[in-house]
Picture 1 (cartoon, rainbow, N blue to C red):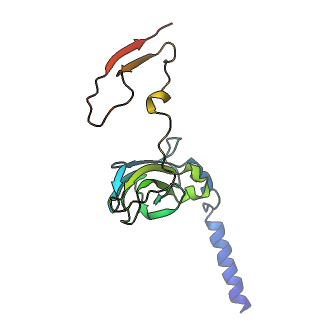
Picture 2 (picture 1 turned 135 degrees about the vertical axis):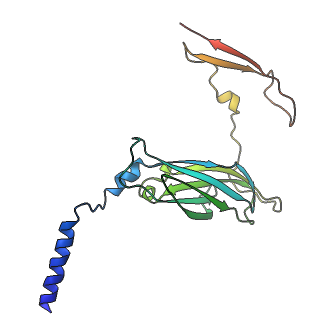
Picture 3 (picture 1 turned 120 degrees about the vertical axis):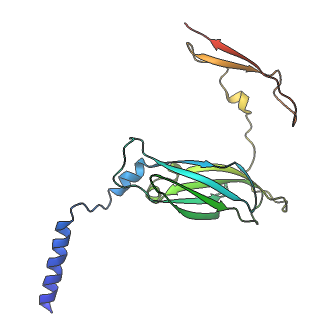
Length: 195
């Protein structure tokens, strides 16, 4: 019995010495460099429809990593973080695509498409990619909580003056609020300031 134990440990030792390329915790370093670029076919859906998406895995150093994720996780979550639907999708050549069906019982509101890799689960959730999606359920009156529109209109968040020495476009409409299907006329001019 002791003789077979010695052979077992000897073989195990030889296998460990013969494979110096084994990695364990170094994979977390690769995860810190992974970033995902996600595109969806649109941003508004009706309950029961499918969200089609494409994913690209990006490394900031523009180098091909030795180890990279081959699986991407995609989840549809509420603003409070509750999972509505989800799935796993295969990445080939640093990209992939998929389709996630929104359950018909989902109520109206803004949900998020959360996308991350297996390695990214070792880092902060702030590194995940989140895409806001408007979900409409015409058969239910309920609305998801926390779906208020931003208080600052888009045109007020744009800086009023360009940086000196830069060219910019000036767009004037004469109005800040428009009715649905109202014709909009814009005056466009180039503002070229050189100091």
